[in-house]
Length: 334
Ligand SMILES: N[C@@H](CCC(=O)N[C@@H](CS)C(=O)NCC(=O)O)C(=O)O
Image (tube, rainbow, N blue to C red; front, side, top):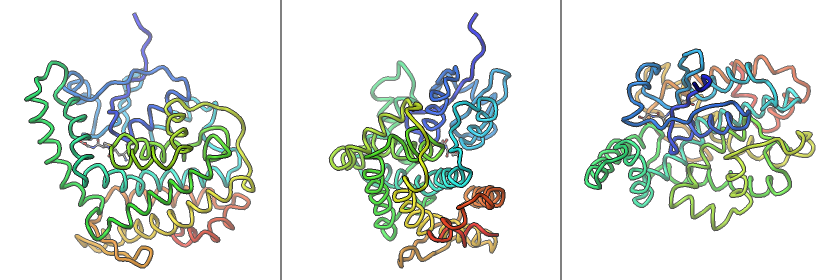
């Protein structure tokens, strides 16, 4: 009989699922990748509290959801090789970029996938093939494709993607890719020649963009260095050491200043304030332009969590100077 192993329920089209899968591969943790579909539905139901992937089932039969706590749990069980830079200030910056990627980086991914016709057809078709399961007829897959698109397109509202926010969301992806293209030209991963939590989070979203026709073409045509990182992150490995702040500061500062402090944190703070007031819609000025959407509870919980991590890390030498200079600090204080 096979030794009990971790079972990861997910989908190739889920950024949070592939993020955890790359983590498991990096750690060499024996695991089975279980596609969520009709044949795995009963087992999924048994362990999942929410209808969300990824779901990790431990060898002891414990079901876990939400990619960040899953990775934090596994990191305690399998500390080596660590996904956290040794320098505590850099470790927090990596955690902050992961948070940005999960919460804001999902917007470009979701926006491109469900607002452009070709992308919508492509993603809905791939999801439908999985949902319909093996042996489904082409007619069944076609019907499921329409159903998936009908379910997902209205969800653009949940990420705030509409005509008024398109430029902000698309500009954000372009800026991240511009930064990565330079930053990754001289190193294998964001914080040096070994993968960090930030790589996992950011990669999950960008990998999904790359599998979709419109942003995939953008990456293939204009970002060859980033494309190699996308490939590398399917099987991340220790290929060298962490780098110092002096070495990596250009790219990380750029992400912190324009993306984390410029978009993610003010948007997340406005989302939390709207929920507190009981508003059903909020508008925040980002880069001098209004960005409006329905507030979402999950983001408010995760803002509280990154503030908690900041409170624990704030005395790390050098951290406050970076967070102040990049404009992040004012949003991390409660
Ligand atoms: N914060 C969660 C997000 C999980 C999530 O949103 N999963 C999506 C797929 S990427 C999902 O399962 N959505 C429900 C559905 O598609 O039915 C995490 O990090 O795991």
